[in-house]
Length: 358
Picture 1 (cartoon, one colour):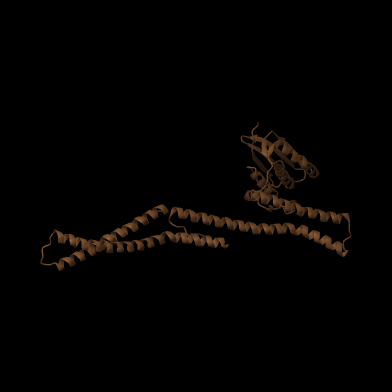
Picture 2 (cartoon, helix red, strand yellow):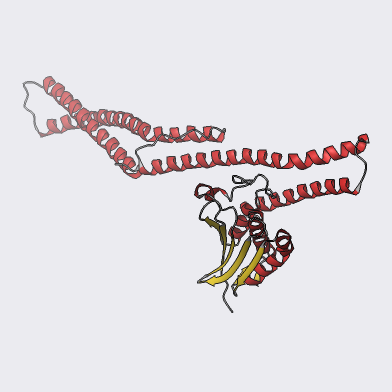
């Protein structure tokens, strides 16, 4: 039997069977010996009813006593052997969990034959893999944050040391440069805080009825001066799409998507924002005609601090899309990306649960 329940049933039946067999065999042997010895003592005399009763009274307790003792001993041995077969896989699982708890995320549990224990072993292996992935992401995040902080801190330190040593003359330009780098660090800290709380489902959302079309217009109006400065045309084609959301958070999502589209558009290019209701969803699409995304890179654009090939000179910290997706998922929605390939633009789609038109 391949289940724990079947193994337990079989083990109990086996122990009982061994005990009964031992009881019968040993009892029979002891009874024969007792009867033979008694009959030998009374050789030459006729056995009457009373003598037979006395013979049975003498043989039965001894047979049952020795048989019971032998049955218990045999059952104990059988139970010990059976318990080892069941406890062995549990011990392996216990050792593996202790190793994983100690930080050995490469440890895997041998697959036992029992279905229930095999499922537990698979869950432990999956947990170890998740912990290993989480640890790798934590280490990578620390390294990426340190890298993002290094440039502004170096700029601030260099400017301040130049001022202290008198090598750099105090000027509005120097102070503006220091203030800009400090603001960059502050935005990074705020973005990381927002991302962390969103991914841990600890983000406080102040939801209220809203129209995704109005939010898209507001986001476009906020960034329109930047589009005009670059000569990038920003088009909005929106229709009513009622939602129940935290306005500020969804506005942040749309601003991040528009900012990403602008960053990857060439001067004189075009970006469009389209909003509509599709069944039970409210959908906003931000499309650009810029750099595009290679098929093998599509699944990575939402990773923290990921910046695709050729984006080294692009502005941004590489977590805008990560924050956008996390905020959308906190609302029960999502953000996805599609592209026909490098140089053919990209489209980012925000999907949110549509509210009733009450």
